[in-house]
Length: 525
Image 1 (cartoon, one colour):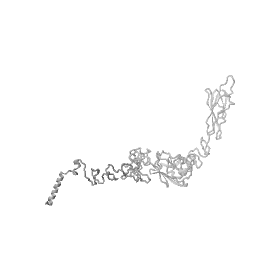
Image 2 (spheres, one colour):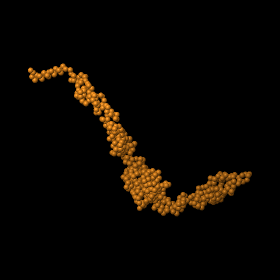
Image 3 (tube, one colour):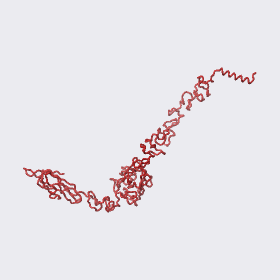
């Protein structure tokens, strides 16, 4: 009888003998034999030989129902077949994620859900980069392709990067240094050639706060006069009136104002609706009160000028007329005095209100501008001309010297001859007539006759007249041919234009007697 130890040794020996002599099925690797293993490693009941495409995963084997999981569960070579793929991107809806692309990626019946950032019902999902300071296309770059001049700045509206005001010129950008007097906004701060402004460079010289021909909202305007001694640019000016938000002059093109020139800035720049005003710029959000207000103009932080007005207590308070600064007081200090302002008294065009927008202001009537001792309040009808005042001698052609409302007119000369007395033959007298001459003002005339042209052999001159200063003189003709006489008349102030008379004197007939002159040619000038 075998004991326990002897039995165990016998079993081990039998096992070794069997291993040596038995076939090596399932013990040798396919690497050693080149054969497909036949065991079921994942324990799903199907071996690789039976078609298990993943014998490490018990949930993968032929014949099972496909799950939507991105795996070929049934080993048919297809992944997630028969599951819907609404956007046809080869990813089934059950695994797809909604993208902002205008498609229903996840098959839930909604398109681009979750991408409506502004709540307007429209998904905010551009398909390419947009000039907005964001990485729209998700490539890690912001606003690529929009820096045209490659200066590091774009025209894209961002919260952190200043805008390039001219993306076609690399030297113009928010990081550039302003260049003096080049008429460009080099640093894109809205101001042109800043750094050179001083108080008084621009003066408020006229204000239309209360138009009559159009509504106030259509017809308000004011005028600026350039007193800087240089050409300036109005872009970037800050306009302020009491109780209103400041307005920054922002125009597409530079508003160039030469030295001593005037510019009109209007609430409405359309001349067809603003009362016929030719404005260089139209502002907004700035109103000029009729009763009382204050208007200020700044540039680059410098207060250039300020004008205040009240309800007619000191400053004029016209309706349908501008408040006009006297031409002798156009400076930023002088215009602080209400006494140098007046109401305009003429219209700039037919049918408009009164004022001179963009033109030279009329003298205010409280001053004697021409030094003739008369002011407009005294009746001086042209206080720019010392020759014009009430009672002045009427001596200048086309000028109302004495301010009586009438302008002196030049007299009219009329030269003719008396055909019944003139034979128009050599050796006879020619009788001239100036009786049809006249003075429109009714003045008494003086006459002066002259010989302007004559035949080559004639000796007739102006001294040959019986009286060259009479109305109807006579002169003896000595040679046949063409004669031209002229008459000028005077009314004591003005002389007329010459009136000319051309006459042909015939040869004396040799056989048929004297010619009576009735058939001679008369050639009036």
